[in-house]
Image (cartoon, rainbow, N blue to C red; front, side, top):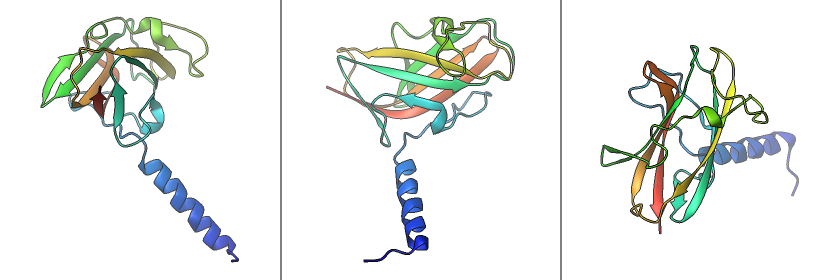
Length: 162
């Protein structure tokens, strides 16, 4: 069977579309004024499809690109699981300093805080899925900011499994 170059191009475009359509949906945080992040800005292990599958007794890793719109002297983690519209802080992560997890844009050199407005940084961290977490579908809220607002924030659908 002979495939024309136009048919080949259509096939490649369709395959790319299907590949992108299975990427994890990254949603803006409803109350955040930070610039919305896209799926290409956020990578979380075990989140290749339309929902992150987080298995208890494992560890997941996150990498996020951020470009703060103002200077930040310090960054605090706002990491919560939202179940039935009720935000529940992730123990051991909520309210902790995000500065030890800030790298240069390439994600190679640890730079910490402060962060300068307009400069691109990479946030890298990992988090444990504790055995006490219930097996439930939830929304994960991941924000980095200070008392004046967020440097970056996103939400994603997830499911915790046994």
